Structure formats: structure tokens, C-alpha cells
Image (tube, rainbow over all chains, first blue to last red):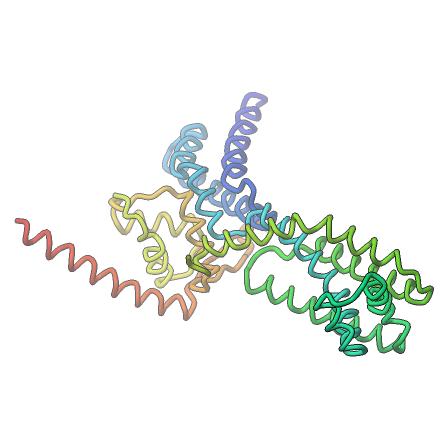
Amino acid sequence: MSEEFSLDTLRRLDILNWIDEASNGLEPIAREKIEQQILEHYGDALANYRSSGDNREIAHLKILQDLGSSKIARHKYSKIYFPEKYLESFKSFDNLASFFLVYSIALVYFKIEDFNFGYYLISEQVDEYGRQHFMEKATQIFSTTNILSTVLLIFVISLGYLRLRMWFSKNHDHNYNWRALFISITSLIIVTSIQIIQSLNSVYFLPSFLFWLIIFSNTAYAFMSIKLLLQYAKRKKLIGW
Amino acid sequence: MNLKGTLPLLVLQTLAQEALHGYAIAQRIKARSEGVLDFKEGTLYPTLHALEEGGSIEANSVVVDGRIRHIYRLTDKGNKVLEAQTLEWGRIAGAVNSVLAGAR
């Protein structure tokens, strides 16, 4: 009984090892699906070989032989699923994008408020005092408008952004990571709240510091993300050069 | 014999007959070709996933005897893909046969 149990455990480890190699590095939802299917396949094949008169050990070896190389399967799966490392980079890129979303609202608003100054700033025809003035105005937008309309604006844009991400996820058939979404939306809310608080107190340093902190902590990942996404698109033949 | 690149066509044709789960698809293809067309079953599932991603087939999870089974069936798009690929395969097979006939 004990020996049979040990053999069963070893066989299970064999097949789990095959699954692990075949799904290594893929996104969690793909790994789960692959594991379910291969175990389902194993159960069917075992029943089939056993009904043909093979003992458990022979049946097990035949199944592994029929499955073939886990590395070849891994290579084929990687053409279909978003590898986890791509997903990680995408998340960083996504966080950066959500931050820029908030900041761009301030910039757009400022341009509407003071178009000429925005033009001079972009043309680099302003001095240090002018730049500070720009940053102050850009980060104080929330004090110059009705709070309710600002909150609504943020809410509508965030909702639109959320819908876009969900569309992307659905149309690319890869795992929509709710944890990553939570982090993104939380950063969005925190940064927005800090900007609102800052605008009421008119403190210039805080948003600038946060701005650069978030930019620096995400830029490298964002570049890596763009590179990996381009590689992925090329492999999927979405783009060709 | 392992004919690289033909597995999606064989899967689509098999599912055109009836909805099946992964292991049954593999067994059906091997049985129909009387063992001539052999392939590693580990590569069947990536093929199924790719066809599913492309919308040619769809999977339903059903519980049979307390076990979850993924049953695949052909979609309308899959039917069209099957028709197109069957024509293409006929054209290639015809061309190869013509060359072989000339060589005799």
C-alpha cells in the first residue's frame, strides 16, 4: 500500500514536472489552464492504457512518451500566451501611463488657461522663475475649478481608461491582472488626492518631487516594456520589419 | 509521419464531425490516419489554444463524472478556415503528386 502510494506520488511529480516545464514563465491563467488540461489528458490516457491491459507504470511511461518534449510544448505555448515577464513590464508601463494621465490633465488645463505661456515654455523662452510659475499653475488646477467638477472629470477619465484596459485585455486574450489594476487605480487616486491637497495649500515642492520619483522609478521599466511589447508584436506577426 | 503545420487543419476537420475533448481529438486523428500521422500529444494543446485564440474553435467546460472536461467545438469562423485550408491543402497535395508522377 505504502509502496504503491510512493509510486503514485512519483508519477504525479513526473507529470507535474512536465507541466511546469511546458508552462514555465507564462502568465498565471495560462499555467492554470495548461495544468488542468494536461492532468485531464493524463487521466484519460491512463484509463485508456489500463483498459488495454497495461499496468500503471507502463501506462505512465507511454503517456509521457506520447506527450513528447515539454520544451517544444513550452516554445509553442509562448507564441500564444503573454509571457509573465512581458506582463510585469506591461504593468510598470501601465502605472506610468496612469500617472501621466493625471499629470496631463493639469497640463492641458494650464494650456487652456494660459495658452501663450504654455507655448513660450515649450519653446524654452522662459527663465527659471517662469518655469516655477508654470509648475505652480499646472499643479494648482484643482484650486481654480469647482472641486465637484474636478472629481467628476477625474472619475470620467479614470473610467474611460479602465474601459480601455478591459477592452485591451479582452481582445488580447491574456490574463487581466486585477491586482495590477488595483495598484494602478490606487496610485491614480493617491496622486490625484495629493495634487488636490497640494493645490489647496499651494506647496510647490511636493508634486514635483513625486512627479520625478514616479518617473524615475518607472521609466526604465517603461522602456523595457516598449521593447518587449514590440518583440511580442513582431513574434505574433502583428507588425513586420 | 509528422507533417509539420498540418495539425491545425487535422484538428479543425476532426471537430467538424463532432465536439470533443483534447485526448479524444488526438486519438481520433491517430485512428483515422491508421497511425500514419503521428504527433506528440503535448503539441496538440498549444494548437488547440492557438485555434481558440483565433476564434476558429471554442471550449466549454463541463463536469462529467465529477471531473471538469474541456470540450472543443468548431465555430462558424472555424468552418470557413477549414474550407479555405482544405482547398489549399488539395492544391499543394495535387502539385506534389504531379511532381512525383513526373519523376517516375
